[in-house]
Image 1 (cartoon, rainbow, N blue to C red):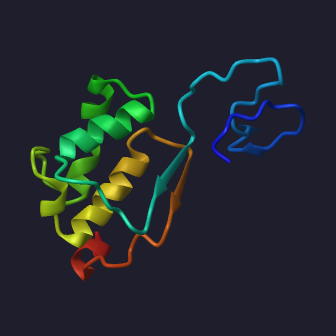
Image 2: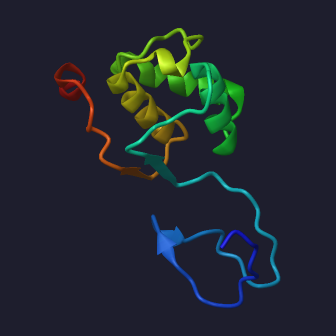
Amino acid sequence: MTDDVPVTSGGSGMTGGPGGSGVGSEQTVTRRHPKIGFAPQNFDVPGPMRIYHLLYFIGAVNGLIVAQLVDRYKSIVPMTGLPVNTNFLVNQLRLSQKKVLSLVLAILHDPEVVILDDITTGMDTVTLKK
């Protein structure tokens, strides 16, 4: 399942356009701005990772440059209760803050569709009301 398989036929669609890359069998897949964001139920970060490391990684995966990333985070974070200072270790955050960070990472690149995998499990009532 992890090998590259050449596209020979078929199609799929979501968000008003072709799914995947929409390429034919002889075309090369090029990276595009992802249209889907995903916030998993279990948000585990390996090792001691700082919030800004995680932001830069997820931003890069989703095609954001640093200036876009900073602007998006600054516009989203006041609504969340997350620390503005991104130097904190992710494992220092409370469970509800980790859930909110997962949501922030899912919407950071401004996707058309966001898939929430039971994101509210483990959130405290104050965070849920926000």
